[in-house]
Image (cartoon, rainbow, N blue to C red; front, side, top):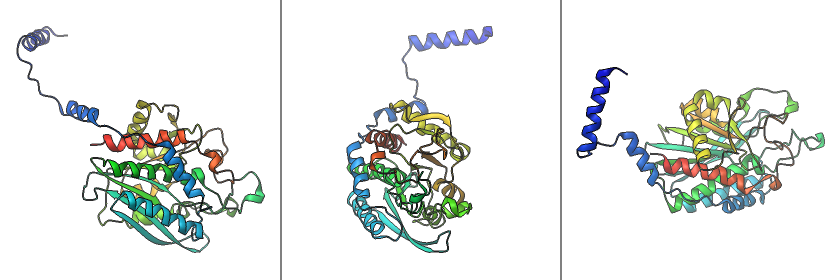
Amino acid sequence: MRPFLLAIILILTFSCTNGPRKAEKTAADSAAAQTARVLVPEFNKDSAYAFVVAQLAFGPRVPESPAHEKCAAYITAKMKSWCKDVIVQKCRMEAYNGKMLEGKNIIASWKPELKNRIILCTHWESRPWADHDPDPKNWRKPVEAANDGASGVGVLMEVARQFSMKEPSIGVDLVLFDLEDYGPPQDSKISDEKWWGLGSQYWAQNPHKQGYSARYGILLDMVGAPGATFMLEGFSQQYAADIQKKVWDDANRIGFSSYFLYEKGGLVTDDHIFMMKYLNIPVVDLIHLDKTTESGFYPYWHTTHDNLASIDANTLKAVGQTMLTVAYEEQ
């Protein structure tokens, strides 16, 4: 240390310890103090689990089936009971096989007048084919989609219920996408990624509000399995690394380090890709990745075993409490 710097430091130290302390707080200190005063509600894991059960009771929510229609009505009614600004965005999209599908994106918005807002999203329908089932005889059977669909919806329904009792200080949009999982079966040999995430593609190109934007988004995908591992998805790392780190840091800080791993995962084509591509909103894909499986995903992904037995309320709690923490602590 240079001598003259030492002298200045000694003078400053003396004046601070012997005079009135009137140092102003920095912006960072103020923000930290503000965050410290925020009381984050307790996420009710049993409530979220019950919302998963309710969805599965309709049967597989395959697009354009009676179960799909009834579940859409159920989710919409629940959202409207908690939020005054709910939109059902109807969309018509072509599937890989040329079939025109009628879909419904369900959007619930808190404080829609605010420009300072975030998105929490998932998909709600079921895949028509269990094409990754170990038994080829099941490849044309629909998936119950307990984890790959219903788990994310169950978490966000409980988040919505909590918001109805105490609104966050920022604007939040909960977006439930339809037609996410109608991509071509694995034996079709069709590999074009444009056939996946049809509902999110439509919403990203036709937002529910003209000129819509948000600071960032978090996508939930397969968030209910016992001992789930959420690794750092590759596209999220490339385009939303700071948000991804924030979410993982929050989860680890509040006690869920066994779920949220600081480990690199693969690149996943998911709804977040289209949100970033068409709206330029950084979105983190919070998805169950597993390096021990052939697919790299949750073990029962796109199989007939993706049922209620694959759901653990404790995992729903880890994800849901993290989402509440992110939303309520955001300034």
